Structures are given as structure tokens and as C-alpha cells.
Length: 202
Image (cartoon, rainbow, N blue to C red; front, side):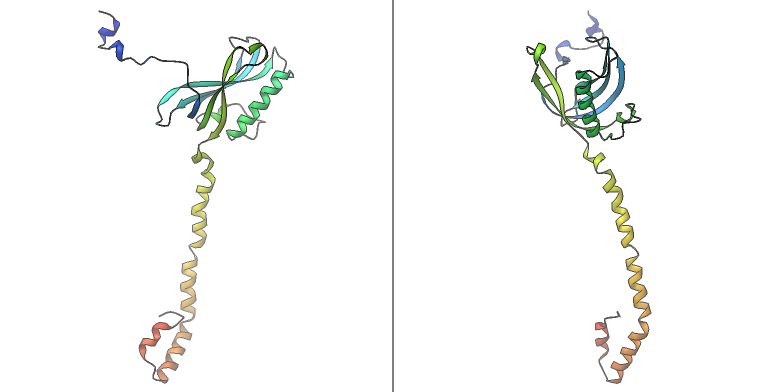
């Protein structure tokens, strides 16, 4: 008896986990966004990473994808690679709704949801024999983008609300005119039903 038998688990029914995620469009939720000093491949670099938890159209988890942005190479933030990475970083942050970078620390991203694409591309230069899967076309959930207009709708209707009482006030102010018209018609022996056509109401 093995450990699976101890818990009544059929090994043939276990779905094997994989770090590979097919190219395509996925829903995402950001779980982490932090600075990191050193990576496995580049221990001397300082990076910022964003962890995207990915889901299919049925909102079933398909795995996680991490985006790295190089802040400094061996303490130098003026290298060509860093500048290029910062360009991508700023563009992605803008797509995630972050426009003020002066006080950005990553906490603003936690919990954000939206849609992104995974695209595999061939490497260049010394990496020309490799392929890399990149995150592209990030956009926030429509619900987040439409939050402001949704809030404005009840405000617009609230402005129209006083219009109905204002109309009633006008009718009351013209009550005297109504009585004068009715008196004239009565003097001319007009039928009472004609009062229903009074433009001041009846």
C-alpha cells in the first residue's frame, strides 16, 4: 500500500500540473507586484515583477505568469537594457491604470483584473535559438474602466427629478387662469366636457 492508497486517491485520475501555458487570450488577476534584488539567471540585477494569475473563459485557473522589468544591472540604471525595460514597464503600468509613478510601490496593482494575451516569439542575438513567451495587450476589466460613468448615471437622473414638482407648481400658479377660462365658457353655455381640453390641466 502506498501513500495514495492511504487516502483513497486513484493516481490515474490525478491531473498532471504543468508550467506551460498555451499562447492565447486569458483573464487575469494580479496577485503580487514587488521589487526583487537578484534573479536566478541574473543575481546582480534589481528587478520589479508582476504575478498574473490566469484563467480561461470559464474562469478556471490555468496557471501563473510573471512579468519581469529590469530596474538596474549591477547597480547601473542607465544601461540600454534597463531603459528599454523601463519603457515597457511604463507602458504596461499605463494600461493597468497607473499614471502617477512618483509614489508607485506596486500595491496599487494587487487585485486588479482584466484580460491579456500570451505570445511566443523567437529570441534575438545570443538568444536566437530560444523562444520566449511574452505578455501582450494588457487591458483592465471593463467593469473597472466603466466605474466612473456608472457613478454619474444616478447623478444625472437626480437633476431631472425636480422637473416634475416644478411642472406641478406651474399648474397651481395658473389655477386662476383656469377658473377665468371656465367662467367664460360657462357664460357662453359651453359644454362641461370642453374643460378636459384646457392646456393648463384639468
